[in-house]
Image (cartoon, rainbow, N blue to C red):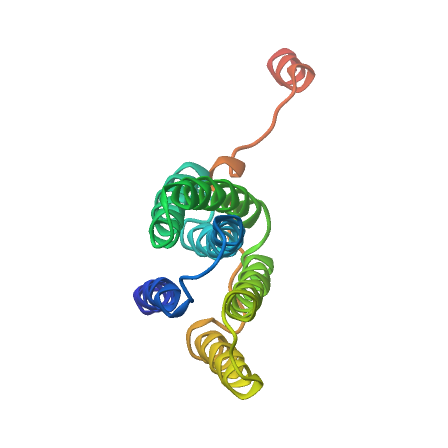
Length: 188
């Protein structure tokens, strides 16, 4: 899993560095919307990863995902201006919190599928941001999109297990008893 975590941090670093290639002559509203979209998609990915890493431990997965996605959204928005940073902070926070809870509630195999879908959403949002904020040629956009998809597919082929074992959360290993069964066994 440490290889997967290093891949996640490398991906987030690429996302942050890609904001430096965005043209600075845009309206603040466009910048806030783009910050919100990128932070939300990154928060979904981070929440899915922490939900997988800490499966069955909802508190830990929520805390780690909220902290890292909030900082990611803050850094992405800080590139533009203060209000975009606030927007990115809270967008990353909410998306990571929700995806960490969803990834903890489903099986590990389904959580990997959620991670794959949220990664594809993140790629699409980044490419859309480049289209919206820059006047790039179609060839450059296709190269960016294919490179990003190749990056994510390589990660899932190399890092994800073929059949992750389903994990029963620690709180569900106890035996349920009713009052009638307790009284019936004591009386008999």
